[in-house]
Length: 466
Image 1 (tube, rainbow, N blue to C red):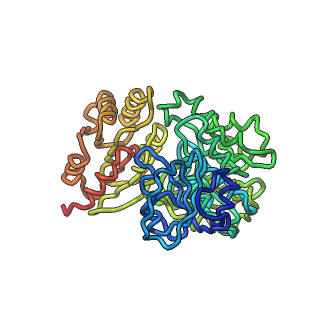
Image 2: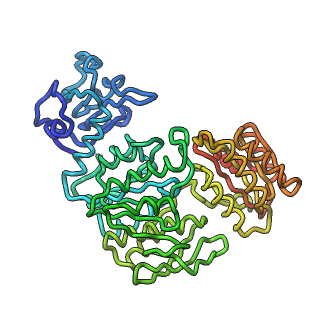
Image 3: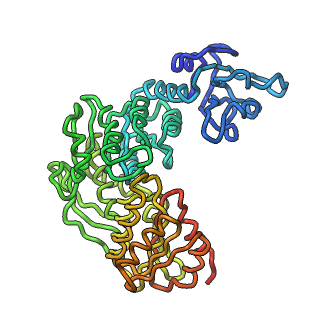
């Protein structure tokens, strides 16, 4: 974003303390370490930081403007800055950042696709962006900057040349997606699926459904909802919408439906897609049956944006898989699957299916960490995972963490000696076991919640010379 102090005042209704209305800025930052000359620095207060404490650094680096709530934190005269930034005071700097993003979203013609869901939203977002980029100058959420700070910062990177934005929306409580939708005003809303996750503040599946449904509720009669026809909770949300709906799925009738699905050994899937009255052949070179659903959601979105079938296929070919999502590696002749970015009950089940279906002449080794943010469902969910593991093709289970240990004990009770089961207190111990135990042609899958950081085991394993 670039503009004048007047633009900020129009957007956030603050009070100009220093500078003139025609003072310029280019770009917006909340990080004093990376703020550039001429950027607008917003003093956001976070859980671990307060931007007001870094005002001197931002001013020294040549910030063009400052938005703050506490003017007493402004540094005194230092004589180090040739041009002083304009300063605007507001009651709430986070709200100011969000309002500024909403202002920037509406400044020029712009279509917004918003993506949420319990699983697959980052991958689906990337697939959609790859398809839309074949026709439009596309802005997208970087990584998973999908919250009340990340989404506004993405919109504030918008330039007048951007025609489309693909924005990921995450949440952990009721009302959060509603607020993100107020800022982004989506034209198309995608809900990938709804299952257990974020159960600390949201106590049950109906709460999660309602929270995710805030995205569909935000759509006007001119909008489009992209609906997973195989997910009853998503389908239920779509029944009372003002917006047009486009459905996707595999098992149930849908506008965009996959069939004739063939697993290409360890090289992904080949399948047909009936796209309304057209038929496409898709080659998806990635593990994970769930990625077929992500692909269908992306195709449904591309269709809704008027992109031709052949062009969408080419766009999918440009998709770059995200790290730690069914990422395949090899080390010393051992197949490694890094799916350690995050985990919840449904994604753990999908990971187990992927491991079961992986063609290997060696053993299947499942390395798991805790599933977090499950609230009262935490203990039963981990015990249930153990039962699923006991019935799978897993040969060795490696569990790291107290909750993962519950899964190990549950699996042991059912599987007996069929599965070798080990519990470790930390990443180092688990990695040392794998270094000694894993053999050529084995397949090892790594899975856990973000806080469990199970990829550290993989990193130690790969760094070993054994």
